Image (tube, rainbow, N blue to C red; front, side, top):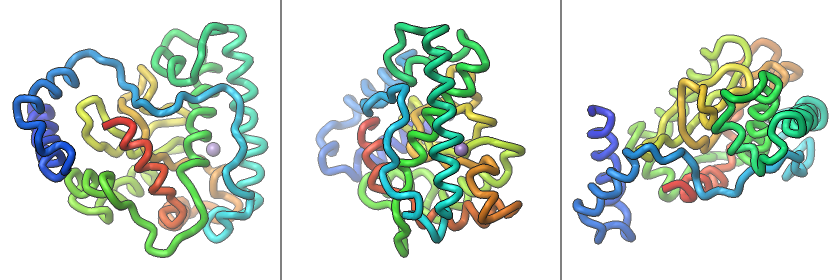
Length: 251
Ligand code: MN3
């Protein structure tokens, strides 16, 4: 119940700050929360992910100060390409009717470990490339997503600290996430291997807004064992416009 109360408070706070939503009023907010509390499946209105690898939205050397070109090339054209290829094999064998990666992830407990590893791997990387752009100084969120971050974590710096810690403390390979749960509350967490918050078997559940790959293949050539340094630099290339689009598709 505490969670619901917190979420109600956050929602009302966010609502009060939004010029569009001021007229909704508390009665509607209550009805809204009732609908969130139902067993409705987690899904944003965001475009669903297909099974083919999409073109990288920038050149291999575009993030050079933060992610070196060689790492980007191997990561995209070898590691991520192989998740897409193996996912298509698993889809053909186990779920030929499936239309999107999202629907597979929501039912991932029904499938093989090959499906779990590669559906997760493909989805996570397709998201990861779009979550980055060329380095910007003072790179930071703005607009509604910043308001939500400040309401939830007090400050952008606090979000960075918590998500950096989640990534640094993930033992072995995995991902750290900023995601939005079914109560429309922002959360931070991490998952092992190629799991993600859309999987019905995940300990953390929600719609991913931003993810950082903390597998060694994402940083080892440039940073070797210094994962925390890779994460600290990575904040300079986060594409907050894209994170904002994902956020607005969900709220
Ligand atoms: Mn990777």
